[in-house]
Amino acid sequence: MSYWLPFTPVAMLGSYSARDTSHLLPLVPLARLSPSAPKRHSYAQSRQSFPRRPERKSGRRRLGVEEFTVRIESSWSPDQVISSLLKERGATVVECPHLPAYTVLRIEDSLHIFEVEVGPRPSGVSVAIRFALCHPSSVDDTYLDHIEWMARRFSGRVKIAEDVTPRNPNGAMDFNSSALQRLRISVVDCVRQKRQLWQNDFGTTAARLTCDESLRRFVMGGHDPPS
Image (tube, rainbow, N blue to C red):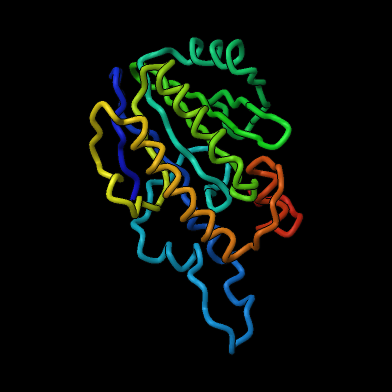
């Protein structure tokens, strides 16, 4: 289930519908092992017990198996957030015709690519930051740095928008003044779980790819996903 991690100072808004992976389930290669090999716990198998998420109204097929996403909600305007990311984080704008209501930006370095969706809300902005799970594990610390910076800069409320929950005792629903440290622990725990599910089904090959590139290479076998 998804869960909220309140972050102070608070300028809170409502929820942002997360992308569903249910349409991808028939594509997941669950029969890659020989009949005599032990069965592994896969992403698709874990999804069987999850409640179905609301549909996202966009031109893009609902995906998510290939990525990890955290969302931040703030009272800032979308233009303020976009301007800040461009000037202070070196982001670049990416053309995404299938997401007309959102501005998509990319923040990258020599090892990692992060994608940021910025969209309007009735009283502010929703910011989703994601990366492809095929990245090397060095992506974790850089991802956490971006999340913490945005939470502070935009005075936002943070949500782990994934169907995994922390296994550690610090993964509580509510956070006090030590929220940032506990947020890091929870995000790292959830990323490790979802990365393991990804690797169970698609292998351990590490690659610096966008989420769509990862989807085409590993899930769609080099083909574009149907719209």
